[in-house]
Structure formats: C-alpha cells, structure tokens
Length: 558
Picture: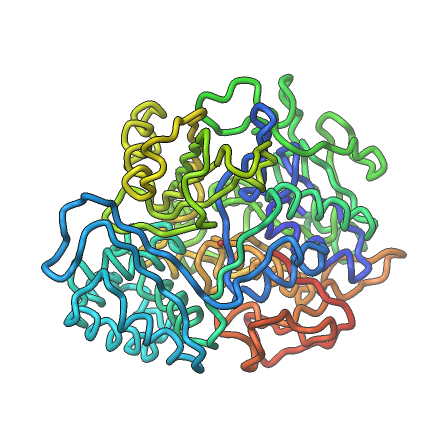
C-alpha cells in the first residue's frame, strides 16, 4: 500500500480485514494525507477545514470503523447562515446591505425540502428566486455519467437556464466552489450535477452538514494507525516508494511475487514533508509519531518490499512517475493525460481574537472575499474563558489568486472583511494571524477532466490505483477518496488479489455498504445512517458482479 492518505487507509483496512498481509508506506511522519493537523505554539491546527454531508456514506462508514462517529456530529437538518458585509454596496435593487440569510431545509421529502428556503432567500430578488427553483429541478434531468455532460461548463449551463451573475455568485457558488475547488462558472457540469443531485435534490437529509469536533490528525491518522495495528498491518511512516518493478510473467506463474517496491533512502533531515505549511510558524511541529517498522522486514534506510499486490494511492503526478511500464494501456489519455488534471489550491486564513466575536459555529459569506468561516476555538485546544478569545478559520477554495500572496497582504484584506461580517470584531484585537496553503489540494475539476481520470484497474494484474483523482464519479473530496480506496480493493480482488497469510490466495475486499461508483445513495437506503456491517460489495467496473462479505470496510476526504 503506497500512500497513507484517506484512500490508502481505506484500502489498507479493507485488505487487512480480509486476512491479507498488508504493509502501508507513507512518506510523511503521519497518516491522513491532506486531512491532518500540526501544532503551533500549543495550538492544534488542521491543514485545511474539512466538512462532510450526511450523504457521504463511505466517509461516515470509515468514521464508524475508526470509532470516531461521535466526534464528527451531523446537524439535525441542513442549516446554514449566509452573511453579507455591513455597509457594502447593494448588489441589486431588492438586496439590502449588511443582512444575513438562512438556508434551512424544511420537513418535506426530497427534492421539495429545499424549495421553501430557496423561495425565501433574501439575497436574491423575487424574479431571481423564481428562476432558481426551476434551474434546481432541471439538474434532475442531467446525467453526470454521460461523457457529454462532463464537457459542459457549469456557468454556461446555468446562464442558459436563467441564472444571472447575481444568482450564480450569491447562491450556486455557495455549494459548488467549496465542493469542487474551482471558480463556479468554470466547473464541470458533470461534477456539479453530482453535488446538486446527491446533496440537494436527493433524500431530505442528504445535505445535512457534519463538522469534525476533533483535530483531523486525531480523527483520521491516529485512529487509523491504531486500527491498522490491531489488524496486524505493518505501517511505515517516513517511508517513500522510489519505484515499482513488475516481475516477468514467467516468474509470477512459478509462484514468485508479482512486484518489487524499492524504497527511497530518507533525507538527512528526516521524513519528507514534516513541516506545517503555515506562514509565520517557525518551530511548529507536525502532529503524529512514527513506528520504526522493523517488524515488517523493511530496512530503516532504503530497501525493497516484495508484494503480490500493490495499491498506488498517491497524487496523480506521483503516480505517473511510479507506475511501471505496461501498467497503463496505450488507448486513452494514459499517464500523460493525468498531468492535464492539474492542481487547484486551497488557502486557509487563521485569525485569533482577544474576545468572542460571533456565536455561529460556521457561516458562509456573499459579497465578501470570505467564503466560509469556522469557529475553531474549542477544537484547537485554545485555553479560553467563557467570554475571552476566539479562533476563526476562513477556508478559501479556488484560491489561485491568494496562494502566492504574502500573509501580511492577506491580513490587510481579510481582517477588515471579517469585521464587516461580524461587527463585534471591530473592537476586538487580533492576537495572532497566520495562513496555511494547500497548493495541490485537488485536481482542477473543469470540463473534460472526467475522461482523464483512470479506473482503479491497470493493465498489470495486482497493480491498482486509488486516490480522489481517479474515476470514482465523485468530486475530489473525502468521500471521493474513500470510494477510490474501496474501488482499488475490489479491483485487486478481481485481478486475483495478493496472497493471504499462510500463502493461500484470499479475497481482498470486505463489505462496504455502498456502491463505490454511482453517487446516489445505494438502493435508496436511508442517508441518515451508514449501512450495516454485512453488505454487498459491488464491482465498480462490473456492477452485476457482487460478492457477499461478513466484514465492513468503509473509509474517508470533503
């Protein structure tokens, strides 16, 4: 298992639960990939603010498997406060300045549950609201799986259905920019339709928001390390794969391992990417420790691992460098096409005040550089009294305009922007300010990206791909990452997976309770709870091929 992000964790648990000998390699000093935490002057900081929805059944299943469900609570029902700056110029004749809106689902069945909130949304005019409902229902006729849909630009599709600039910025961007990490108009219609159809037009509770109540490093990485240890899997932190070599066919038929994974010799400074990624954060240390891994037979410096199966769960640029010759067929975009997926950044702005400035746990913003803001006072471990000190984190998706801007310049823009949204911040003193940057947070989810995303299966039996960038049918989110790990486990099983303990061939995937390919909730099951432990595991490339399993392996990225 190469890569200890959510996709790799997912596949590792599924394979280990099925009785396979699993070794997971992660170049960083911690598991969790993009969903992790670091320490800064006693403050626990997540590398990025991640949320999930009730319809994210795979991610919620992982939380359950890790024993973390209680630490990632869901709203009783979808409820979002949308703020506008006080004193900002009006953005339309019917829009007042400095007002807030509330988007809350009604107690109606889907897809009617959101219509009352849309009909009353005060940040749009009456005529705009009337057209919004029609456009929302038009998404029901969009097929995200149709390759032609993936070639359409979301902004063009919305404009053709009466959604003017104001409607797209004040409403549609709230849902699409944060979930697709691309400017709203530029997104792939296929991926946007997956979001809207599944979360907003599906089951009534599908869009209810969950916000982790623990740092991501504890919620994902540390919990996964404990579970994998109990399952007998080997975990090597600070271990970077340098090459994957496929054995000749005649060697495999004679019983030799299919692959040899060569490890890079660690840098003198220690494991790769041990830093925090924060501006103005000297001395901050990454959370999480490393096991020495001596018991899995891997030398501490360099070395090789022989394996019957390999799950390559790394970003697409790293995967392109590691896949051995012959793994990707000549037909289709191939590894060169993976590079066209590109990368899109996310920037997180962290502001700590000397007093409380808002009672909201989170909020969205319109007509402001702020997109979403979260209260992280408690989760960070910040020592506060009832009326003193608050830590707010702004999450900026589609953040290319900010990714190279100095922290001091970002401060000049965003501290006043927060004061415009939260009047109490005008009299508060900023005691600390810093910025974290995820330069390659996701691939660019633009038209045409769908045909570049490969399936889990490669042309080499026993070598499979995982990662939210692969062809899951979902956006590059935590849910997409988990589903990709499940896809990889299934594909490995179907290509005569690795030998289990004792040398006998064993099935490699445990039951998941979800269909890893289509975005809709499986079989119309209740999205309010993960499926039970005994479920059918469906082959994403052959939905008619099912295998019954008695174990559950469902894991986690939004």
